[in-house]
View 1 (tube, rainbow, N blue to C red):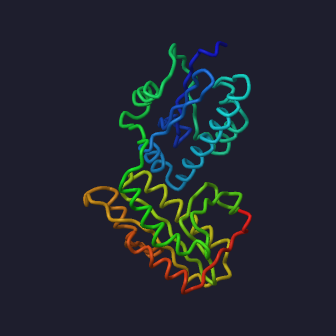
View 2 (cartoon, rainbow, N blue to C red):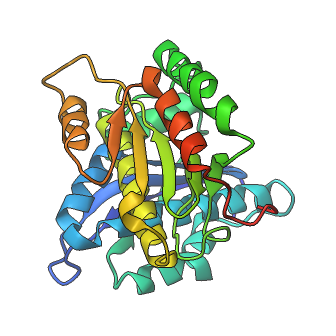
View 3 (cartoon, helix red, strand yellow):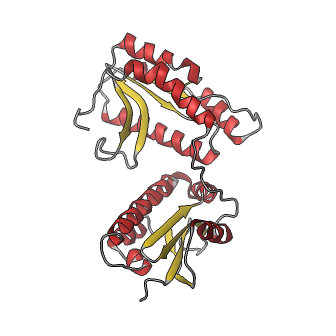
Length: 290
């Protein structure tokens, strides 16, 4: 096979494998010695709704495929090529389909007589998967930068020697967790106190994913650390109110404000979390080596 040959496959979810219906959520393409991959946030959100109680399977599948593609690109940069068919029949990818009872599907690889660029991949993705796809900005949004700076100043710098701050939790660091998740701060002293900053100016799908993972983390901590004062746990969501009151993002912000499992505060109130950590004398609880 020539290294100039270009193939792509469509990544699909079959909510009911028996019926044969499926939803295209992503595109995987190989051009030369590089794999290209992207998923539609909108299609993933639809797939989650269709799967109901099994919606967490989508994030797990996406993460696993992303990791496999990263490994494949690293391998191809150091060794001889293997094509998309090799990738799709690999043990890791095949296992995903078996593990989730056939809800993960890949279309037969299709040939393209072309050399792929960023713009060409985007056009193909919009044509086949999601016409609303927008290329990610290379420069950080000013609102996001200001949001993070406030939290860093009012919270992180104040408690970074006391509790875990800006910690990337992984299944290796916290067994039972099935995804990687960054928490702005979390500590323990008889009860947990933690905070997750979420920008409600981002797309709804991104907000939904971060909130779902945060609530998943809280549930896991409840199971792993039962011998504590659970009623004194305090979990914060730091998020500024979206401007558009009619948006899905604003509706989500309102729902979180009324959720008894967490306390929603404005970024300018981040020092309230720092004060709570100081008063309770919360400290790190995970191994220092992580």
